[in-house]
Amino acid sequence: MADTINTAVPEAQVSRRNEKVGMVVSTKMQKTIVVEIEMRKAHPKYMRVMKSNKKFYAHDELNSARVGDVVRIREARPLSKLKRWSLEEIVRRSSLSQLDEKDSVAEAK
Image 1: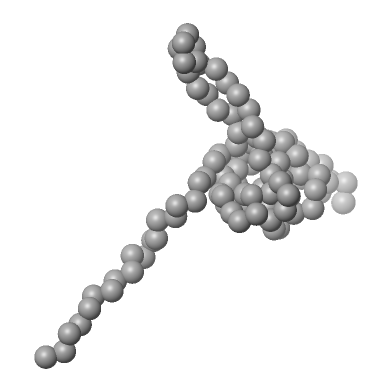
Image 2: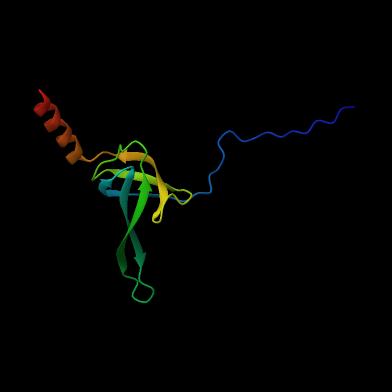
């Protein structure tokens, strides 16, 4: 009798890497974007909700993100001194970037 071991691999493996959603504030570097995350946390004593911002440097291979876009970034291995995140997806395009596209198309004609 042959022993068969069922080693089914789940189709969608659960990633243990951290993800954050924030707004792109700078795209001036090559293949790098700066994403600002707004965190809301209750004050330990006064229970007032306080906002704090933190900037993360993320790798954008195709230079597809623009200033004002809302993006999802995922934790990655260290890519440089400050870069430890990579662009996962663009959640929402900025209305400002759409206006810039229309202007550049009009100027090209």
